[in-house]
Length: 178
Image (cartoon, rainbow, N blue to C red; front, side, top):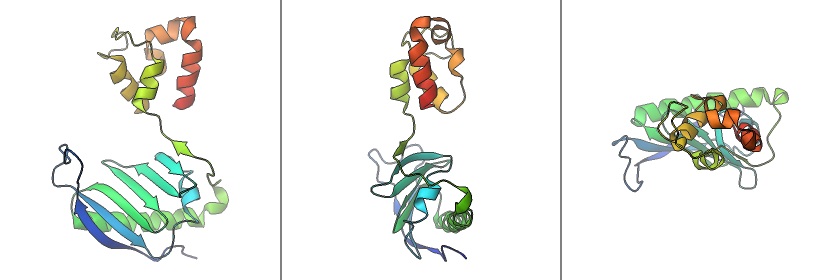
């Protein structure tokens, strides 16, 4: 049985960030209303890859999408960095299919019941040597932290972290975060 019949386009709005979406001017936020509450399916969706954050107390789930974000609440969905209304309608239709697919496979998915948050570059940077030595090929440890989170660099590429036993616990912590 299908969980969700539709996600209706409620409205669109321009990006109202401060400063306004300088990276992608003209993009919109698409806001949709599901045909029924998403509360039962959100914990299953939260178990999928790509989750940035999940709060089971408020039942709010956010995924990273390229570009932008997808946030699901029980009675509403929001998709940022959308090119136009046509793309927004396509994304809402694809989201409906994804929700139904996850619901149909829920007996094979362990729903998430605890908070989940993705790694932040500053959290990783605080654990790095902060020498900006460049041995990893990056100009700064912060740049290296961003690339670690994106999976474009490996922790072993940081020579001080890889060779200095004083960083053993930090290596383990970073590996756990990633």
